[in-house]
Image (cartoon, rainbow, N blue to C red):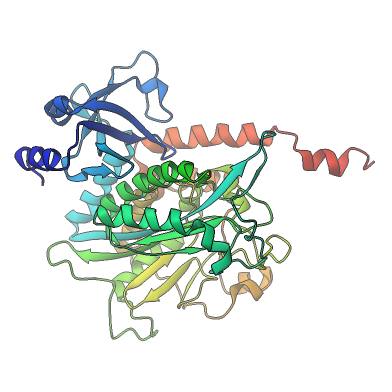
Length: 452
């Protein structure tokens, strides 16, 4: 825990004169106030005031008492694009009491539940995002200053990535200046799509970092004439963006990886505890999907099968089934190494605090009831028919937000991971679905105008 004197010393050494007090709404979007350094004590003890009714999904109306965003000194993050300012992640309080509708506070609640059982939840998240430009008519195109990013399979292509290298180099340098251990960046499977990787940490730190990453990528992109978007599927014919979650439980005291076992008879290097955790995740996968893929657009990414007609590259790279396997990217859960699991279904458009809180609830339920995930699935799941998938006892993930929300309504465990946020989340997302479902799209007009 950073004490006040240490924090003041560091702020002075870094030349910080302003504080950005930042929290997230129910969608995971950053909300903030700018505060002069002279108000540091106030931000630590009381917080910056917000009208909660002006923010989505924090359980407030226009009549409610102020939300006070109180900074966590351990989240001190100098802003590389603004040397006079440092960002602090904040927790919400109302009338001097922790506000349970705060997504960060809710994750801390679930981490405390895990800690009481002797576990620490360690997580790495891999942000995928697009760089795009938007025309005067509102249409978007992949950002490609030299016009070279046109390949059907642009993943890892040097010519496609070359114009973005100044952006990626500066972004990596920013992250490593903050001590994140950023270790690689690449051009992903779609034109204009990129991924940046940084080392794992405890779940709360990782959620804070993902939030700041979105802020940083957005600010830097504008300097290069682009828009950085974390929308899951901005282009119908290109691969969507995920926020892949790498995870394991560690011993809360020693830090030892409790998912690791050299004696795994299945040969994946996983312990019985890991299999029970995975059993819980798979058992609750359909409800988890509502939190991990929380927008209408996310389900354009979670497509069944190979998707040869859906993407230019030939693959969606997104599993549509609740399954696990070895080092195999057609599975929901990939065993990326001994004691190391990755969920590939999580959308770039999620709220990381809510996803990780729900994940803890599902995994701990698996441990409590010794749920078994079944045998690992090997080979290319994309090649199997729906009948073959069903024969293996594998469940299809929801194919729409509406379907996922119905699963969440029926799943007490995943709802418990969201706490009081669950009812507001379901209500808000149901309205989002209804608004979408009432739209008449250009596709419908083209398809049906003279169809009959």
